Image (cartoon, rainbow, N blue to C red):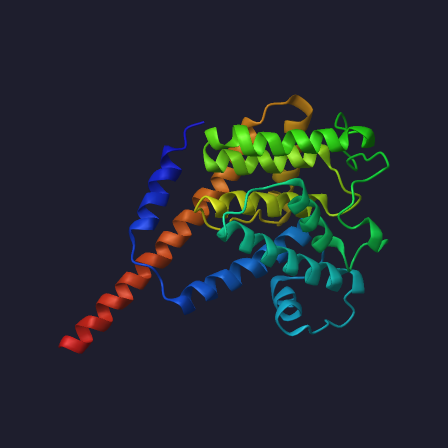
Length: 264
């Protein structure tokens, strides 16, 4: 796959003057809320973006909202913060980090707290998907070790967006935990993107986008052809880069207008 368009967009984005600390924090806040909302919605959550924001920022409970959804929101918010700090710190990925991410994702909402971050001992199958199976429990540790080897030794030879998409796909194929695998996979994708200077990029949860995401991921697992899923993630990254560039262009325009007013 040709990533030159993404590289050109990222280069263009990087050439703008930096936003202020307050502007950066506002964008980070918005993208965190979007991530928690979208990732939970992809798993069947019913909260909208505004309800998600209220829970994350004030701890407010929404009338008639299932307690489990509130706890999932709080869990994923903490996990997002953990992953974002790791990415900014350029911390190398390892099994302990992945287990910690899953623990944070499920610690309050898991049916059994002791299972949070622990590799499953039972067989797991994708609901409603024919021809796809997850790694057998007795092979999980070996497959996770293989994943980390790949991330440390092979992934550096890949384009960062391809790495992010494949890390997501490979992890989902293993499905090592009892719960929270999808949310953990999307956080790993964010980790890979942010570690390499790309913006936070979220899979959208509307009905059509969710169906395309789920079907593309399942087909990748079924056929072994990863290119369609890499292309899907790359398109989301492209849209995010274009949006960031529009924000930066608007910021430049605002600065120019402010300067012209002070000199006139």
